[in-house]
Image 1 (cartoon, rainbow, N blue to C red):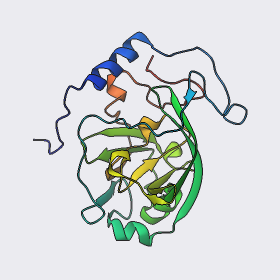
Image 2: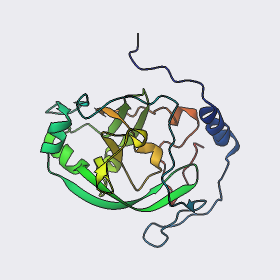
Image 3: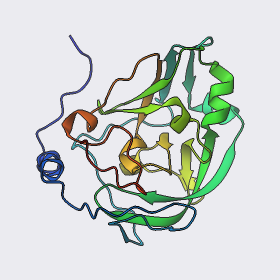
Length: 219
């Protein structure tokens, strides 16, 4: 029996599945991140919209645990103090959500994924990562995207701890992909030798999610 929470059949989930079936918001345009800051079909917002699956865990810094395992030489189980004991990085990046909003210049603090990789040492055959969240959510990345510059396990935004509604105490930030790949409420990072599509990927969303190529939905 799975120990993952069951997701409610929320209106948002049903709506986003319909968008995938309809190809909603697709413009057919392409752009390059080095030339175009706003990807095709996106619009700018000043706030930070809150989107989740209807289950918001009550994990705190005191109860936080992150398991890092699978195809690695040095599996780890970090509490929040151990996250803070790692090399700390600050970065500024943009958010691009598949629901068409983008927010510029977000200031993050946390552990760069490149430093996490150095700590756990993925095995030679590990080419994929699956992120598991405390609300039962999952999403998948290839190792190159997980390790990309700017990607991090973030615990602070704009100089303050990330709030629960935005995925605190620790969430993933992968700014070069649509933000559904940046899993909230991290509880496990699983390194794999084979891919394993996650919650939205099996519901019609693209397996990679490059905003500049407008990879919103699967073919």
